Length: 69
Image (cartoon, rainbow, N blue to C red; front, side):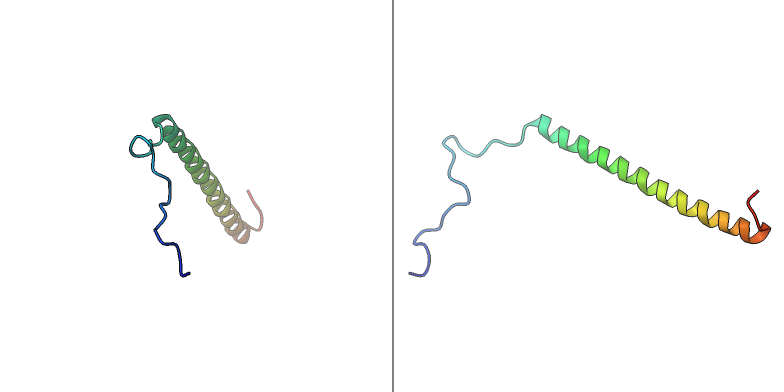
């Protein structure tokens, strides 16, 4: 035997046509969580960039003056 005699569908046929789509509320909720995740990642990235820039600036000030003002 070298395989199944008839191809098998990925999902069984539905009794009333095609499968129902995702409800609108679920789609909106997924977009909402994705938006919140995006905002948090942008904020975290901004905080890290600001920290690095402040450290570099402090290092330059210390190198020029010998101490922070």
